[in-house]
Image 1 (cartoon, rainbow, N blue to C red):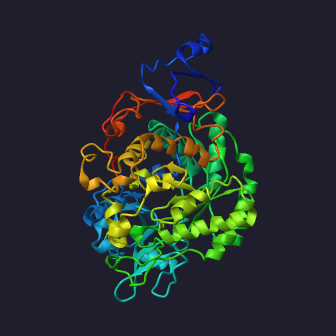
Image 2: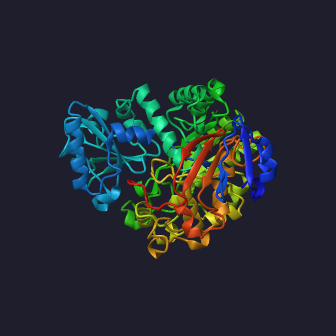
Image 3: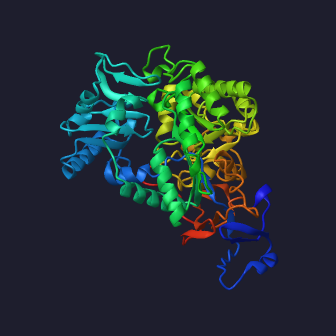
Length: 550
């Protein structure tokens, strides 16, 4: 498939660029003695998939060096066994970082520090939950950062307490409090490079040839990308974002200086343009910002709407400063209150600075006011969406339904309405928040609003808002041309056109014409980056099943 949804039979590339798109006869003149020819024999070629919201190689580092719970059954006994084994393996570690804590393993979805203290009380242990917005500390870690009943949560954060007002050790969106602990857990340059190489290999196996990192590991990451690009090891293009630490004018000026300093890193492989700011938290942590109070089942005060990280005026000024400097702003916003604040900020920047091709984004946009959907389209704000969250999944959905209530839960992820409003959406999975990073599963989930996995695709237990289903082609665009637009790489990638980079994925069948419930079973046969085959698969079809730990 090339641009404008046109289907052709042949494509030729030289020196990493597409030089011909057309028919079999026309391509013959591009075939020489050193030309590598791949006879597709009816297979299907798409532009390389683009993951619009991916945290990069952090998962590879976590799994190899940290306390890793993602592949453990979500119950306290299993978690404690993993902790015991880890402590025996690393008896001298003074700071232990963990990942993948499933809140469903705890009564009322509320973990407390004693669960860790029973196993490890002589080292600081802090375990991020599956959203990474929440974190459980043991007593020693609490003491290390001075967490007491008198500690005030940072803006936008929540410190959970027991019936006596004492902190349980579970925090949501309190990154500034846990930062001193995180700083004690480091990985050396060799480990980071090995992890990035492994990450690219995994993503290539899914047909992914570009991705956007929404903040984190900025300057170290830039150096790795430059080194890999220079040595020919890069197999994915990347827009590398950076977090805005303080959501105000001072924070904006600081991030603009960082971006200005690093513009020399821009290349065919790298883009330095995205500033990431977090307005609210996550529904399951009861830290998403809502317009109306949480449901009573959330167990919060009657008027509780969730914390917020900044005032509207602060967000407005921050956004206007970054926008005027010519950079993109992406807001993490999951609650309808947070999305509304983000749109207010983008509207302010537009009025303050004038119209430009800004390509600002909202990540997740889980819940939106009815009137904010067309407004988001009118403001040309991109939605960085996660299609594997669209259906009724076994982890996030029950928790969201509980804290939001059934009626409000049913209004999440109105993808068809967003598409009809002209909102450009990208596809991703927020890896490694969810490990199921295959675009083909996301494409099927968005087109069916049901689970894409074998044995689940016909079950009503996984079906959610079928009226919001979109076409397979709509979903393909999220992972190709829309992704390129969001990365500001649309002149290079996203469609198969002469002059663009030779980034392709070859699939085992035409996913636009096959049964929509068979899209996720499609095999990736070749992934081609910059004209090089970087992944070769064996099977035209695969069994679609969750990646372990997803």
